[in-house]
Image 1 (cartoon, chains in turn yellow, purple):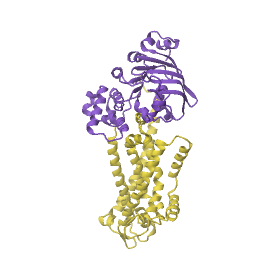
Image 2 (cartoon, chains in turn cyan, brown):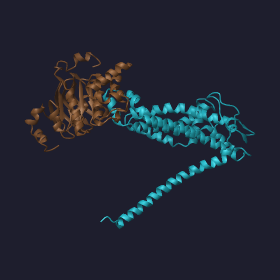
Image 3 (cartoon, chains in turn brown, purple):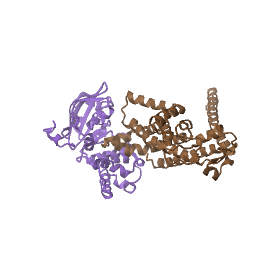
Image 4 (cartoon, chains in turn blue, red):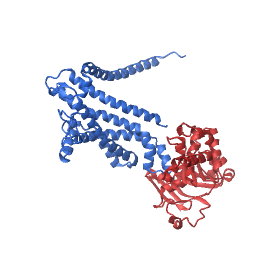
Length: 289
Length: 270
């Protein structure tokens, strides 16, 4: 009585097929990532050395290291984060915890999602118009980081809001019923329990900020500056732009150099991500539900 | 009750506040266009346990939630009529809701301890209302006292720092009651406090509720009639948003006056 029927066999075959298809798609996704990393390590690996990391580019950028660009990227990312994280988290807090669910709020939410879809070159031109020219910040780290911040704000806002929304509503109700204000509820319950999700947004932003070229090209990044920025008013070199330059703009660059630059850039991003992921796991471990 | 002058000119000041903890008059409530409560006139006596019974959707929870005005959060709720708590109209514009919620504690169907330690859960409400730093000794004293009152102290005294969400449902529900006590509320409203619990936990929580009788005015929403009968002094039967009958529990279950009540009690609907 328990023999499989023709229908069972057919269902099993279909099941197998779908499973195979999904599996194949996943493999197709992983292969390029491994290929990129593999090529970078193989081709760029020989270029990496302490000297490469800690010296200036020389000989018209065909030799030497990436030190000013590396430091410049750290500056750009740090300043952009300092600007966008507090702003983005505050906006997300308002949208998630305070704003009434009405047409205006929905329009704002839609606008934020659309902002995330604006091409980075458009952000770049906006940055030039707004920060470089109108606010007269000139081409500087400040202008470039502001542009990056505007570009990455939607990611922070959406990630933060989603992560706050995922805190069970019962916790809020419990607080309100004890007479807690919204801020007290946020401070003691919502924020501590959404911080790991917020960090996810920030991680995404770090990677993107470090890698973007267009928004900083016209607003604060320089092709070649043999000194380190001293303040946010200075221009700076940046890894992403440096990579673009040595890969396409300068003649006579040895093959391993652009790969080396790319490898350093990717490693930087991965290292920053690893730190944030570790921190996130630590916070999640402390989560109490 | 932030403003003492509200005491004097409140419309309920002349009523014997000592006798009634909650009085509603002509209370109507709409969710948008749906009317959930119809002309509810209710006098809940001070210091006893009153149970609210009736079939699902009859407005029990709505009534309960309008007493501490947490229902206002929904935004699309409109009420007419009056709700007096301890002799004061809680619907006046100058009422400080934080003070209302301090006097009126609420317990929910699903235990909802905060994702904090047991200790922090108990002290949470007190912290909100005290506004100053609490010394360690004072804190421990408050926590012990509250947990003693809900008969939970002996089970948890050695793990006050562990997460409250790891407790059993029964313990969680007791904790949810305990965390209301440090701010010394006058009323405890319980919205089906046992319906998520197994029979043993249910009787433990019922015992606790009975234990708290006299110290607080307690209103329990339940659709477990046996529970209403076991664990309350007075009983209010609601149907379709109206109060059908309000009488001492024993009388309601033995000689109900309204036909609807006896039908419900005998299990003909609900």
